[in-house]
Length: 329
Image 1 (spheres, rainbow, N blue to C red):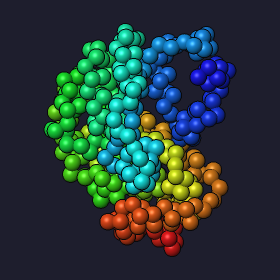
Image 2: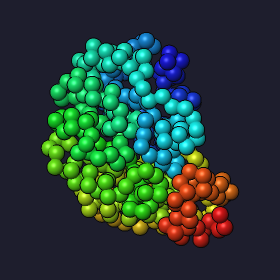
Image 3: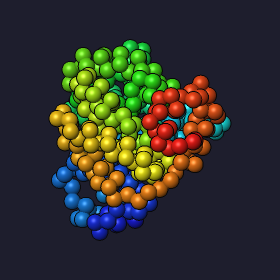
Image 4: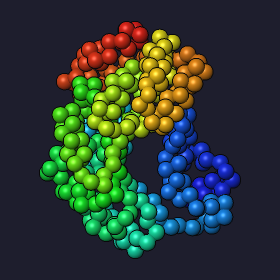
């Protein structure tokens, strides 16, 4: 930690620890902006290396999750761990109580607590955390939002909070949603969004990852989101690289660029949406042609044959324009 902080004090990002933010900032903002915005009065250059005041609590107890999304893996989802036959322990770890006690003892510093995962609505530890968070502290969730809210104990506690921000993690709709966010049902998502809209003091946006599966469907998901009064906050893909539109042939990139150009003609985008895709368009204009088609073919084969066999043939059915541009897979 001291090594990382010493690097940050020089004004540089730590090459290994900050990798995700470095990748994300190819398209704009990253998670470090979230931290810095919350602590805008913090001076890193003057802080001691052992300084620690928990202004933002980011809680990720374990990887318990009810989905095996196509670009996720066993390090982030218990569903993927099961598909890979990797043992996963969902029970309480010995240090959980220490974390709980630390948060309780430092309540006065906390401005925001982020409940992440796995899937935060499936982690019972979040129930007890919600009992000790002071009124006025912002609660942020990044959730796949695919559980039945009426039966969910954590949601029932969240309903009584008045400063809650929901980041709904998905990046396609309808059949394409169920293909990519495997294990989720689109009808449940729509039902949950209607339920959430009835709660005073809660805000929500779609937290979407820009990737090959949506690069030709940006207007589709944007139109749907605006229709239910949601904005889309876009993020960059970290892995696998074969799902990065920039890593494919010129015909795929042409389709992706055209979709962005149509999107940018809309007059209902918020600044973050417009800024993300203006940056993306610049990246396309300067990108060298690459060819990840063999790795993509293997990825789709594995998804449709080894892991989600009920979706066999669905990539060709749901993204015919990409299948044509990519050539034989």
